[in-house]
Image (cartoon, rainbow, N blue to C red; front, side, top):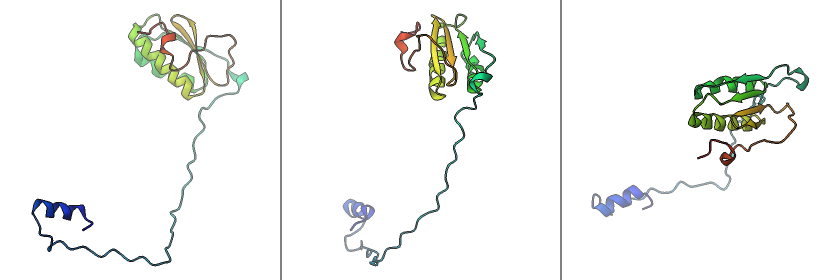
Amino acid sequence: MSNPLKKTMVYLGLADEEEVYEEPAPRRDKQVEHKTAPVTPIHRPAVVRQPAASAISEIVTVHPKQYRDAQSIAENFRDGIPIIINLSQMSDADARRLIDFASGLSLGLYGRIERVTSKVFLLSPENVAVSGEGAIAAGDADSTPFAH
């Protein structure tokens, strides 16, 4: 009795042991055929469509008032444009959420996020070099002024 359903029925008294029969196991031949399924390769798109380093001719400054303004930040950063984010017009809770989002955005697109002042941050794409110190880690919430 290898079938658990049959064993349960016998245990519960819904079937007699004589009524339950075992089905013979299928016989296997000595030569087993190994069939392989066709594999389709996955072509991944480029991570970021970035212009050459010398082609950058603008830096976008954003003064978000609500968290939903993060979409414009992401669209510009995805295009390889450095972003300056001024959070002075946001509540601390929304500013914290936006910095978390921007940290994940910069990490996902191999960029960098740096604190300029307590409420101003610079997002720089992978192909933009920024001299100086001040980069914050994506998960370092204690280094932001909005920490609990």
